[in-house]
Length: 262
Image 1 (cartoon, rainbow, N blue to C red):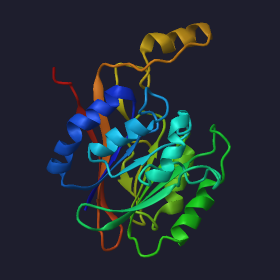
Image 2: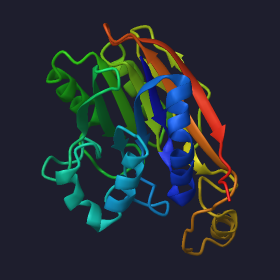
Image 3: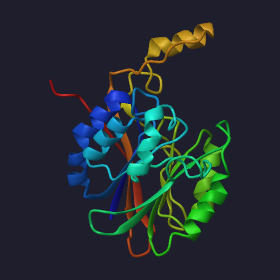
Image 4: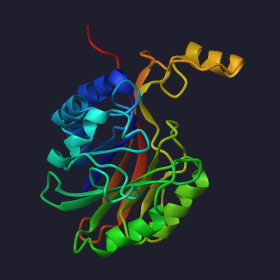
């Protein structure tokens, strides 16, 4: 079965790409489960209930997030009524939401989607490695297991890949908005890519208007970040998983340009 993981959806441009391309990708690539990181989907920072509903209406099965998940206060109460929106599991248990969802794919196979966040150069959270162990210990007979590890540094992401190899189907990194070229299958059968990249405006600096970011670097003065709009691309990873074992058979980077029809 084929799993589609879409990299960080950035602002309205990224949402437009998902809305315009997702159903075509599902059909062409025979996708049984479609997941996207959506923590930047509302103007580049955070996610709102309306934005989450919109993305799910496009055909996404699960939305993952990361360190920007709490940026919009209105999302806090939304978690209770939408279990397909995840927040990193290694935030404190008393916070809204959950970090794992078990959903049925289009072919009827149960799949677990796990959302974790790194700790290096990120806000303080519980240990993502130990949290992953705890979640997997209680997951039961669900064979297909996809992990979004939202982290800053490549070494921490690679460490998570090796830590979970043999126990999950795929570990895909998010957060940097730059797709990496290290897609592979680890010896235990886990597909791995350090970062899936961004779905949004590539005529930008990681999604933000170039002139604004350049001004910040050149002057060191605070600036108001605004999402760019041009050069929209969808970046994703497609993983073929043997549903009987949960092991990945293949994994590949997937990129599509998107031009909105007038």
